[in-house]
Length: 284
Length: 290
Image (cartoon, rainbow over all chains, first blue to last red; front, side, top):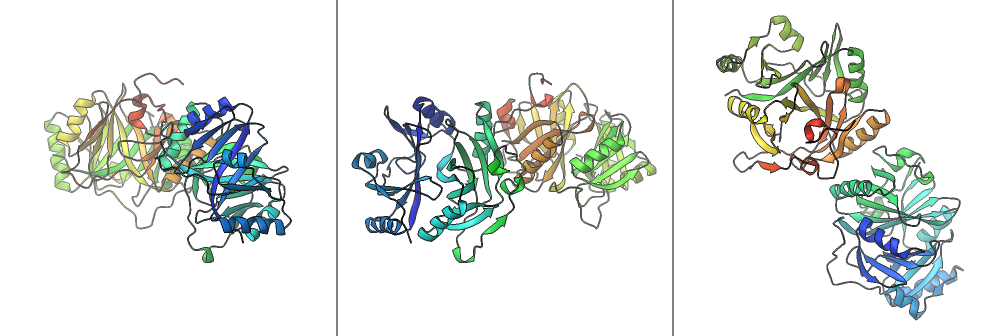
C-alpha cells in the first residue's frame, strides 16, 4: 500500500498568466513567492508553494501528493507499474519546476493527472499573504470523473485513502485525520472541479464572502455547511473555469476503526445544511 | 431607581391580523399561545407569550419590562409620576389580556409606550416553534429615539440600565448579564425599531437566511456579526415594515466592575465585521435606497 504523506500542490495551466496571478493575489489573497514569464508560485502556509499557475492550456493541470522517504517513493512506483498503471518519471527540469527532488506522474482511472513527489521544498519563513484572507493552507481538491468507483478503488486499494462519506456516487476520501482531502464527483468528463483552501474561522470565511461579493467574483455555492464533513464552505469561480473554495471548521476523524462511511442522498440538502443553492450539477 | 428584571413582551398593532399571524408562525417560527378575538399571542420560550399582535394601528407599539415585586411597581409608578410621565395603572381586564398580575403603562421621553409588569405568566410545558428555526427566546428591542442622549439618561438614571457599548450615539443597554436588552437608535418616529429573537447557533442564523429569502422575505441586513455584542445576526422585514432580528452568540457581561463600554463608529464596520451593509434607516447616516 502506498502511503500518501500529504496533499502538496495544484498546478494549473493558463493562457492568461497575468490575470491568473492577479486573481491569486487579489482575490484568493495568497503570497506570491516566485514569478517568471512561464510560471507563478503561491504560498498558502508553511510550504514553499501549494499553487502554481504556468503558461499553458487550462486543460493541463495536475495535483501533487507527497510520498515520504526514498524507499517508499520507489516502492510506490513499482506498485503502480505492477498494477499496469503507466508511470512517467519527471525530468530534472520538471523536478526543478516543481521544487522537488523526484516526481512521477500517472493518471487516475478517470484520466486526471496525479503527481507523486519526493522531498518538496519547505519554507522557513512565516507565511505573509497579499491580503488578510486568513488562509491556513491548501486543504483539499475536488475532481470530476466518469468512473468514480474505479478512482475510489485506486485510492483505497493501492493508496492509503479511506472513504469518509458518499453523497450519491460522489466519494469523499481522507488521507489523514481531516474528513477529506480528495473528493470525486461523478461527471461525464474528467477534470478539476475545485481547489480548496482552509481559512481560520467562520468570521474569516464570511468576511471573504462579502469581500468576494464586493469584488464581483462569481460565487457558485455557499456560504454553507457540508452535512458530510461539517465544513463551512464558500465556492467561487476561478480564472479559467475551475473553482476555488474557502473552507473552515470540519470534522476530524481520529479513530479510523470506528468511522463508518455514511451514504447521503444525491440532493441539494446533502451538499449544504444551511440551504444554499448551486447551479452546478455536482452540488444539486 | 426602577429595577427592570428583563424584557417581557412586545405588543404590535396590525391591520391584517391573519397575515401577521402567518408571518409569526410560518416565517418567524413562533408558537401560537392564543389566536382569535382580535389578538394573537406567541411564545418564543417558557413564557406564556413574548409577542402579541392586536387589531389596531400598525404604528401602535408597546414593550414591557418585568419588575421584581408589587412594591417596586408602586414605587416605579410614583417615581415616573414625579418626573412628569403620565402613568396609568392597567385595569384588571387589561392585565388579564396580558397574562400578568398587574402592570403600569407610561411613555418614555421619546413617546415610546412602555409597560412595567408584575408576575407575567410562564408555562409548564416547553416551547415548541412552528418551524425548526432554533428560536431560544425573545431577547431585546431596538427603540426609536428623538434624542438618544436624553433617552440614554432616562434608561440609565431613572431605570437600572447600563451602557454596554455605543455605535455612534446609539446606546446598547443592558439590564442583566446579556450585552443588551434595549438599544436606542435616533429616528424621526416613535416606536419599536427592531425585535430580536435569539436562535441556538450560527447555523440557525444561516439556515433562516436561506429559508426566508427563498420565500420572498425582504432581507435588510446580514447575515453578519456585530463587533459590539459578538452576535451573529440576520435582520429581515416583517408585517407593517417591522424589522425582526435573529441572532446567536450574544456576549455576556458577567463582571460589572471590569467591563468598560466601548465606542464603535456609526458606519457599516461599526455594525458588522463580516462586511455586510445595513439596509435599515436607523443604522445608516444616509437615506436607504429602496
